[in-house]
Image (cartoon, rainbow, N blue to C red; front, top):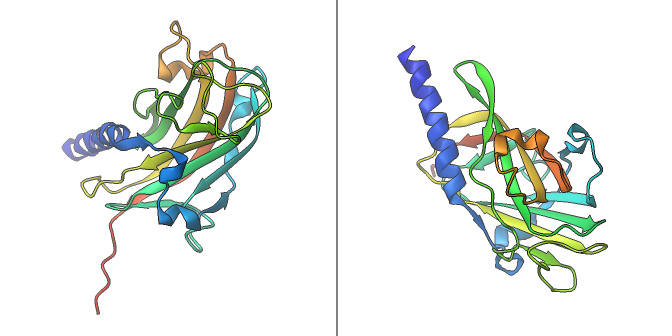
Length: 211
């Protein structure tokens, strides 16, 4: 029993530290590793909501997930090595004051538990949502019929516990003061740009080659 409690505590600590380490970066600051990225086919979770999305043509790129990382069937984040997540999309409608939230589904004491993956973040305030013409957000939001790029840097610390079978929903929506609770994301009245499900995330030890 003590071991199960300790495992649960380790996972909770991982989520807290991970959320602190998730930095928003500008598109121009992407590292050389990100240039090797390729499109990854994610699951859309738009159908979980009853209203239409305010964005379309969503594409997801990451440098430590299939098919970039060879024959792997899951995302493998290596301790001590940063990963870059980039989402491109085209807006359908104007959405002022947008925010990005992450909701994780993780194994805790033998059960799958859904919990916030850190606090909400404003892509606009961090200059990570940039239109194709070089302009940034308007009124901390987006305007219709433009292509935007959303980029995040995953700081994978060496101190992270080894975990697997994590799935994460990445949601970009309008920020509403009366709907702040992330865990109640399905009750958000909208508008919402998109929901993307990132499956099979695993954090592994760094392999050291022996000559």
